[in-house]
Length: 398
Image (cartoon, rainbow, N blue to C red):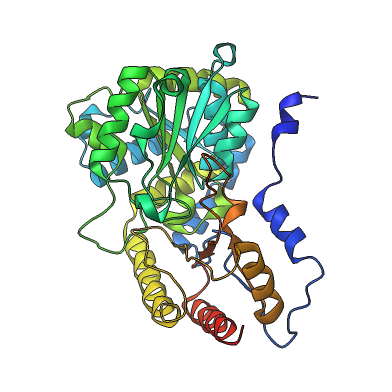
């Protein structure tokens, strides 16, 4: 067996199941899950219809690059969303469809890491566990960049020693962030690009929450957008990851894309031809329609705004919690340890939240997940309100 498998920790939801074992919540209260970031809004009907219409394409093997209409639809969306000249986006070499960002973020780490060089893969802390798993199974050492309220949830790049940067081969970023909801500012991202140039590492920008934000006039800045504005027409060392799961409420479709530096993408394409992860034909056709429509995305954001407004009104008087910059998570500070809060809340109110330490690691003398829980406001508005009321009552009576 691959010895690096022994370096993997249990996945957060396995830890959560163990934490809740033996609890018997009140039977009269229906369970409300705020633990997993699985969108519960209705899937657009036109996506489902397009999927069914093209079931006949299952008789053919899909190609790794995907169909041209899909790559064109993605290129069009990138151009419109991030103000990029459409003529400068090469759908042949700069875009690859993927079966959701999870598999792509993981496989990307395998493709770009040279294990013979004692590599370091950097990532925010707390973080999406796929980053760490990708690093470990690539034979790399994870290096955690703590994000806390003290640094406004922005990694302190200048605190990283030069010898660590010299070994860095890959930096995972997530903006808007999971679980903090932080949008990384322009100055920070410019500094990241400068460091990538200086130390020759690749930036993997996980932007899967980019389409869930509160202000229609201020969408989150994308890394390709910033690169273009900086005059980096080749997007050198930058690759972005996008998904339909959150944007279009189709987590089961497993559809996203990777785009950026064509030289990096050439190598990733080579890897994927062996990886055997081509997107099925019906999924590709349905994805074309999803990337071409923005009306359902506007409606999606409206629902999240309603949920944040309602739940924060209920929770703010009793819990140290603030609205995120974007994404659909709350990241409140808990009055007791995060694991105690999560277990006792489930036991008393049948509401599941995710302890922050299940998403973080102790690094540089700090565990930034300690005394935090992640609440995913993915359920319908009424359920989110009821969950918030139960949490409020739990805190007041606890």
